[in-house]
Image (tube, rainbow, N blue to C red; front, side):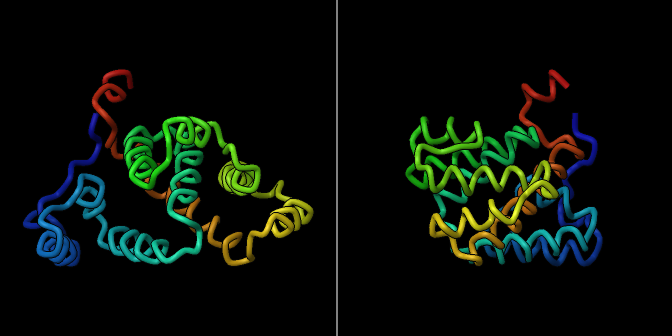
Length: 177
């Protein structure tokens, strides 16, 4: 059940209306999550800025989708899982790659290590050790990529938690909830 309704630009606060109008002018439409975020101009602007910034990460898109799938599996956002499954397949991942990512791993040991740390950033960041970070480096992951994992996890937490809070979930999940 929807707890907050998406807003059309005319019903949004002024700052959100301007942002929504700009999105519509550039893309023709606004998705449910973004139009629901419009209740808070600060959240909407923050999400859009953060999302744009995270598109510049050095993590390859396919791996970024694997990390997003692993994180969203933990968060439990059906809307986000569907979007990242679609994104993963579009990035060339197989159904098996998607299934492994949702389990928090990968057939590639190097990727599996990074995905595992990403999940730990979400569920127990205080348990990550110096040795684990050194292990990522020994596998060839740069400090930039290691830092960007935190941003990617944070963006996924923002979108997943928001969609769950407002009830923006696939119909089958809403019927169970």
